Every structure is written in C-alpha cells, then in structure tokens.
Image (cartoon, rainbow, N blue to C red; front, top):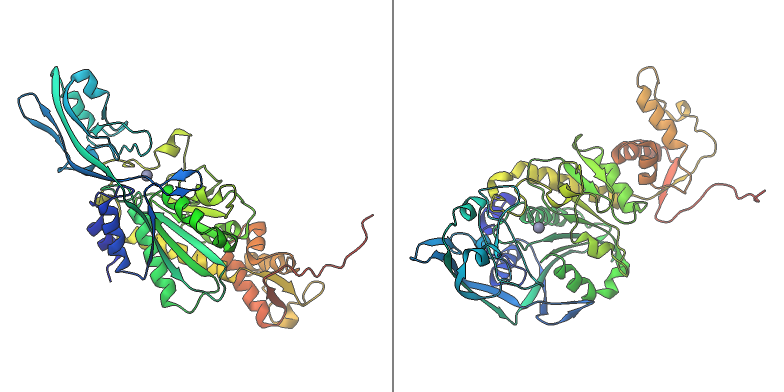
Amino acid sequence: MSTMMELVEELWFLKRDIVSDDFDKALHRLSEEIPMTIHEYPTGSQAWTWKVPEKWTCHEAYLESMDGERLIDYTDHPLHVVSYSLPFEGEVTREELLGHLHVHPHIHNAIPFVFKYYQRDWGLCASQELRDSLIDEKYRVVIRTSFDPGILKVGEVIIPGKSDECFMLVAHLCHPAMVNDDLTGVVVGVDVARKIFEGPKPEYTYRLLILPETIGSVAYLSDHEDLIPKMVGGLFLEMLGNHAPLALQQSMQPESQVDKTLIAVLRGCDPKSYVGPYRTIICNDERQFNAPGVRVPMLSLSRVEKPESIESLYQPYPEYHSSCDIPAIVNQERLEAARDTVIEMLHAFEKNRYVVNKFKGEVFASGFGIWIDYKENPEGHRNLFQIMERCDGERTVADIAIELRITFQTVWDILSTIAKKDLVTYSSTPKSTTPRREQV
Ligand SMILES: [Zn+2]
C-alpha cells in the first residue's frame, strides 16, 4: 500500500486531461490501492444538459523559429499545449502566434494551465519570460492532436454502512501534471476511505467519487438519480497539501445537520482554520451536488488563505493552475492532518443525533455526582449547565455545539457523562419533550 505522498509522486506528471489515456491510467492505478467500481460514460452521451466530450490526445506539439530552433515542446511539459486544443500546423506571424500563446497572469517563469474543453481553439502555453523573447516576424507551429470517441470514467469506492443513506466524498483527478489541485484531494479521499474500511461497520454508507471535474459529477449524478434522495450530505476535497490553513466552505443549506456538525468539529482542529459561506472560498464539483434537482448539502474542505476579494477566489494559492504546482509545495504531514480532520468530521456525523432529556427541570448535578465546581473550572461548569438546558429532544449534538460556539467534541464528552447517569438518550428524529400549549 502506497502512502499519500508516494501516490502523488507516482501520478502527478501524467497528462490527466478529462477524457484521456493518462486519466484512465491514474484511475486504474488508484483502483489497485482500494476496491473501486469504474462507471463508464461514452463520448456523446447525454448527462442532463451536458454531453460527454471526446477523448483528447496530443501526439506531438512544438513551436519553432523559422530556422528550426525548438522554442516550446510538449514533451518537456504537458502544460505547453492548451488542454483540448484543436490541431494546427503552419507558419504564423508573431502577432497571430501571440493571440494563441497563453501566459500565467502572476508567475513569470511558470507555464499556465489553460483548457478549452467546449470553446474550441488551438493554443500553446509558455512562461512570460519565453513570450517576451519572441521577437521574430514569423514562427512555425505544429500541434498534432486528435479527438476520438472515448469513455469518461468515474471511480467509485463504496464502504457499505448499516444504512443505505450515504455520505458523498468527491475529488477530481483531472488536471495534467499538477499536484495540489487536485491530486491531493484524491489521495486524502483514498486514505480516508482506507481508514473507514479498517474500522467497524459505519452507520452511513460512504461513497468516494474520483472523477474528471464538473462533467464527471454531472455524468455520475444523472446516472444515479435514484440514489440522490439517499445522499444525506457530502464533502468535496481539494487543495489539501499546500501551506495554508484548512478552510471549510458551507453548503447551500447552511442550516443542515452536515454543515453544523462539520463546522463544530473544525473548531476543535487547527486554530487557524476557518469557515466561509457557500461559493466564498472555492467553486468546484460541490456546485453540482448543491444544484437544483439535486440539493445535497455538500461542503468543501481545502487549504486556502482567507479570500480578501472576489479575484482571490480565482487564485486560491500562488502556484494554482501552473507548472509550479509540483510535489515540493505539498507534504505528507499536511495531507495527514487533512485526512484526520475529515475522519473526525465523519465520526461526529455518525454520532450526531437528537438529544432527548429523561429529566425535567434543572438536574440536581451534585446528587448525580456530575457537579463541576465553577471556582476550579468555570468554563466546564458553564458548559455542563448550558448543554443540559438544551437537551429537549429538539436539538442535536451539533445544534447545541453551534448555539454555544463550542466544539462538537466538548458537547459529546459532557453528554457522554450525563448519558452514563441515564439522564439523556439519543434519537435520529426529533422527540420534543416540551409540553404543548395553546398559542395566545
Ligand atoms: Zn483546477
């Protein structure tokens, strides 16, 4: 079994375009690490309002000066050619070339990642430094690409639980020769799934999807409409290895139990971590799950500095979508910290239930031996009584944690103490113990 970082090192430089031989190769390699079902969607098949694109292959591509000096070569780096570029061969003027030569907006020595899956054009990518050196009148361009009928693939790891209600984990495997976006989400997802497999049978069924961004999610969802009502929540994983705090983006249903539970768990993790509303940190496959007709509350976990403007939403970390997104910017320690956070979130979601009081009035704490002296432990005393007064069959563990702005674990520990005294019980549905009274 390979570590997360070993998988990153092995798979990162593959040309993982959305429907491509190298995408398949990477998915196949991951299926050796963990049992996986591979769903296949042929080119041209309809997925709701979308159509599965062709398989794209770049056989050869380069830019030459008129006296034959090779200036850009696809064999040096897969990012030199726009993903899904049309084929093109011929002599072009400098001006025409520059109209098809893409550079990175911020990093002068980086090759940018540019894709034109649906608005087709031919294009090359290079560093700003190389672009600045192009002073000749004419150049020769060769881009030998082909568009063939192919098969879009979605890998699904299923960990059966006691219930067929399922929790979705999603990460995308596409993006040629890049690491943090989103090979890191993939390997964290695989490691989370391996850990759940090792443990006792979970309450929920877990489904990890490894797919090409956007079209992969739409293809899977449109093919599994019967499963959508069973999806109780989800978490999209991406950009989890770089040096930035963990950021949890809420779903489109911020009042959902999944949102509340995951937020209350994150509070107890890295103190620099933070939470942001839907579409304020990252925009990715979670959109397909939150979308109309689906409406699965799917949050997103990533490592991103707090966005300061709408522009930073499109530049979540410095090396984003460039040839600088390499294994050196991520490490095993940060991947493991992210994995452990996800596992803690899922454990909490498994435990999250309505808390039903078996007592009335305020509990005679010293009589039950659970009194916490406020002089010795004022916070503990306050938490104990504030938690107990919220046990009413109308609130879950997560509801209480969110209301009191404390961690899920703190609430759980105190509830475990009073549950041992037979003061509370748990229910998967609300069971209010408040007497009904006529409205006046
Ligand atoms: Zn991306």
